[in-house]
Image (cartoon, rainbow, N blue to C red; front, side):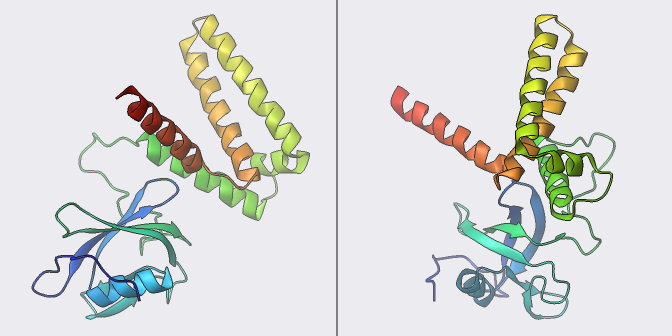
Length: 212
């Protein structure tokens, strides 16, 4: 049994839980948990919440199959909010959307870089798992990782040429192609963009420490 820190549950014995995709950083859902739910989450490494509508402990995905493997549980500075970092096995939202936060207010909504890269990684991962006929990802996979690597080099070269020739629209398109093929290359090796982000984050921290 994992010992909990001094979390602040409300008068109903509940604490808010934010659930985040551990690989992409995308916020998937918001719910509540009791002390028992948090303890079960830590012990089983499966996301557990408290269903206020059913007034019972809720193992996410027990019925739908859309479970959430918990890789880390964090809590905020005030000790009154918990963060589950998970690897989702299917969509988090009951509507079938990957995230419950798929709508925006007004017309100012715009996908963030994290949203776009998360979507790209999910689509590429799904294509590599199912290998649908006619898919470009399927064709890349069938030609082998050497060919995928060659495409990364090719797109990098075309990005450089577009930059040197000051063709910004072409540079944006070539950069998008480069990120796409790099994502395929990483997924072929069982790696993720989040792992790349972690390396960048570690380098930044090291430079910050060394500059002090």
